Length: 207
Image (tube, rainbow, N blue to C red; front, side, top):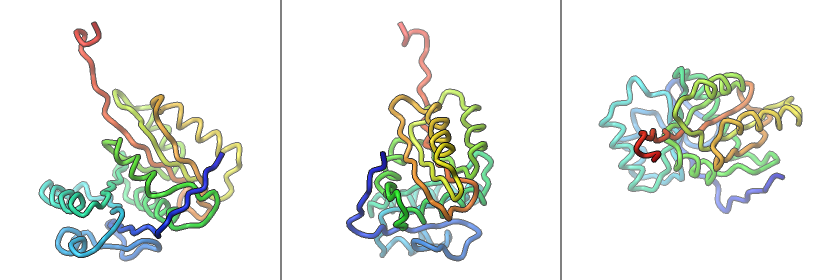
């Protein structure tokens, strides 16, 4: 059963991705301006970034985290196991588009992204179902605490439900999956997985 989400105010979303000069929804901020001035005098509910693993230094990361914490901006970092920038771009833009869309079911809000981000150590993005399932099958001592799944155009109801069930089979008992539809989405589908490192217990802990 879908639950309609009503946002009181329009989401204030900032997006920073390498290789782009603009975004269809939200406010695009070039990466080199993020720490310098773009967030100093602006208010956003969330900042979506990704694809900066090679150039994203520790000092810059700490400073950006500090600014976002001070301004209460949800810093959401999108990753991909192969660091595939095209996949990260698809997922970020699809989720952003869905947040601003009135397409039914209108059941994905910024609160869902905040919740997933809160409980996750990493957020992994996929634009193909099989890529996500292959990744899940290779996981070791980790917990999949939640995720987002957006079906795109021409996805049948049975396929939509089957994909949700397949993803959930890898989640923890308390894990949650926000499933919805984004007909005009880029790629085969949109999947975002929240991963938490699982504590490894020694023999004495089990006794």
